[in-house]
Length: 189
Image (cartoon, rainbow, N blue to C red; front, side, top):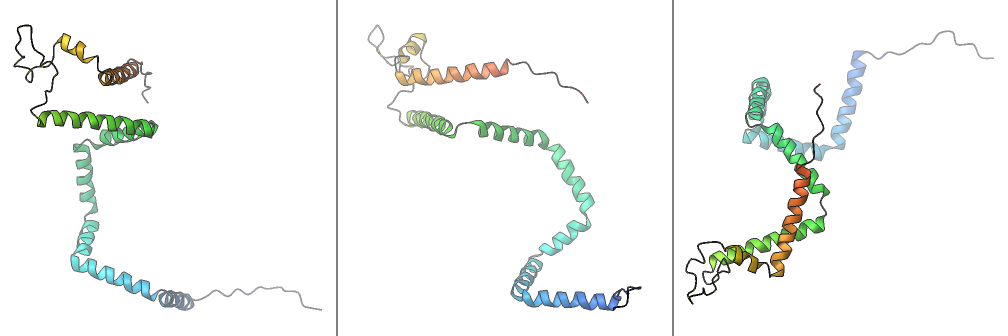
């Protein structure tokens, strides 16, 4: 029968054995990844030639004054509200239907193109009130002044004008409804 184990001997590696084991692992990793390591060394060599490593070294050594300057710049440019507004805008854009937004942007682009065409082509009138007056003369100030109330009412016959006005008024109604909502009181902590 076997003898009972009364004492367990643990082998605690010495510092030299630990270093030899670590060195063996390091050599194995170097031999397994020789091509990658050589590429990395070439990149580091090019960064050193370009002076990037000197800049990084100086920035790390002076990190406290550089971070203070950065914080001062952020506070001076009032970036926190800008960042918050950017996130709010992204949230609003995320809630919009992409097809409706595309349709609206195309309509806006067409309207701006039409205005650009009117300004570049002097034969077209910006305002449609160049009809003969009661005395038989054309209004000479047609390009200088917007139409009057009667001219505006005449423009309302155009279905495209009515469609744009309807969209604009619905937009203003929704915006006014949102503006008239009461904000809940904010608790001060």
